[in-house]
Length: 289
Image (cartoon, rainbow, N blue to C red; front, side):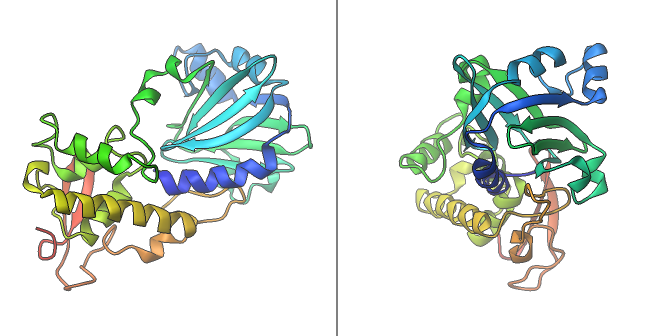
């Protein structure tokens, strides 16, 4: 699943090719329309397909920003409103002159939303597994989970928020891995970067928050921030389906110290895997205590 660095990379590439342009037309796939007809919610949430098309057609793209793992498109017709997108497990945006220009067939076959821009090019959203989301909102409050997200990890106050939450009674007995993947505690850190940060700080992923000193919690937070920044500069991680809008892969996966490893790169011990919060957690039983 794309995490903060991958979403940041997509946003940085969408901005220069979209801001100031008008959405001349919107196309929604037959799969989405069939889903709606069957009372389901594939990709487009809480809105019928035709209303989604009408809402976006004729709007100008004013801003494109990232908030945690979400992409916020600020659009303007007679007033400003939001198109909020989550990439899900396999979502990807492509900026192309035609769908045939999308580099890989697996993405071409799963395009579900196409925005035709005023420059004649297409901003196409492909989602192989269809776990991505799009919501048209007049304001953030219309989708309350957005208001619960922790501060951006790079913002002033993010560390204090993390420490206060991690040391609150509600989270004292939680496994630290589960805690740092909670978007209300720290934004944008999923399984990949949580695994890497815990390995870097030599903390066992199942250790309860109460059994970790404040000094080590600070070290862990700073490690997460450093890894997220490093991954942004590396173009994110491509494990399977992540691509940027040009169809290119990231390179952060080449720098992993623990995620997906069978053997610890530090001590040579065979790694172990356990499930925490529904996600597989790889760790070194020798280095991480």
